[in-house]
Image: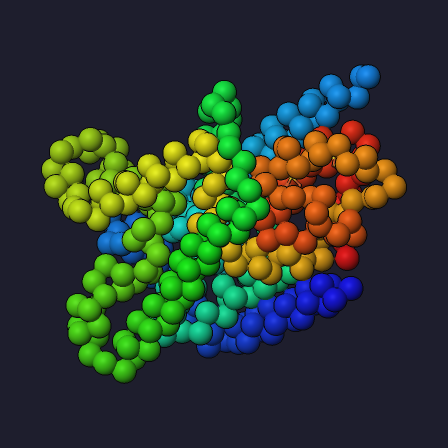
Amino acid sequence: MRSNAKAFIVLGLGIICLAIALSPEEVTRFMNMIIDFTKSAKAGIPSP
Amino acid sequence: MAWHKKPKTNITKLRILRIFVQLIMFFLLNLGFFSIGATWLVLPINYPKSLYSSSEDAFFLLQRMLTDSIVPLIPLASFFIIGSVFGRLFCAWGCPFGLFQDLIGVLTSRIKKYEPTSETNNSLRQIGEFITGATIIVSTFIGISLSLQNASVVENAFGIFIDQPWAVLSPSVFLFTVIPLLFWWGGIENFFIWEKFVLIDLVFWIRLLIFIFAIILVIYIPKGWCRWFCPAGIIMGQIGKHSILGLGRNISKCTHCGLCEDVCPMGVKILSHKPEKIRSELCTNCLDCMAVCPENALELKFL
Ligand code: SF4
Ligand code: SF4
Ligand code: SF4
């Protein structure tokens, strides 16, 4: 029972993180970063 | 007694099914091959950005965001939500580096495997915990330093660790990013021209050594890398041991034959856990134990 309570607390935290991350500015910033990241991964041998 | 044959067939079928599912996942994670490159899929697995990947590895993304001075909300959400509901399910059913280890296990199945004691498992896992903690601290420090100081000073100080510190040493980066880029770079027609090998430096050899170490480890200890060293596995283990989905053992059916512990690839001491739910940071919900149990005493359950 206690362990289940921990699971729900962590799940709640995850949903809060997701909710904040879904705000418009965060979404734009995140997508730009991923696109940038994808381009740099394809550009050549990564260092690192 | 005919029952002892049945579990063996069950487990073989399950392992084939699992490799099949992992291969499908590998295909889905590489949709970049069909020009579907950047997606929102952030998973708690060990699959760093590579040539065709269409997903993000939560731990590498976390490092990247921390070193860019961004609060890593998406990777944290991925760890928290997936871990609290499914535990380490993706480790068994969807992680490419887990698949790589499973395949090594299949190819070297004739070689005798060793099962470390629980104490050894626990002590060696501290190395993984150290790697995880150190990576997060260093990434945060880099992020803060970059926002406070002249970028070139910080870049000089951290060198190749500046972007994603653990990527420099991770064997999965070596396997999925460094090796493919080394051969694919410049197109298939330049697959093996020597000029690009001048780019190989000392870091390459260090990476290669760690990669070879990981392979030797996995040959003798099933899923050795996952048990002790993988940061995503360490984080997911801590969250996943309290997950909503998990295995329970029906004590009225269980005969304590120990078969389940013998087949567990992660070395979970199933019988020493409370029967209501196996709360182990190592359990990946692979279901091998369930498939082998002659009494059907193990069951997957929610809550
Ligand atoms: S613990 Fe193993 S299966 Fe899980 S993410 Fe790490 S490498 Fe993949
Ligand atoms: S759970 Fe099944 S396999 Fe494991 S000890 Fe009990 S009866 Fe044997
Ligand atoms: S306890 Fe069972 S489900 Fe968990 S890792 Fe071991 S064999 Fe797989």
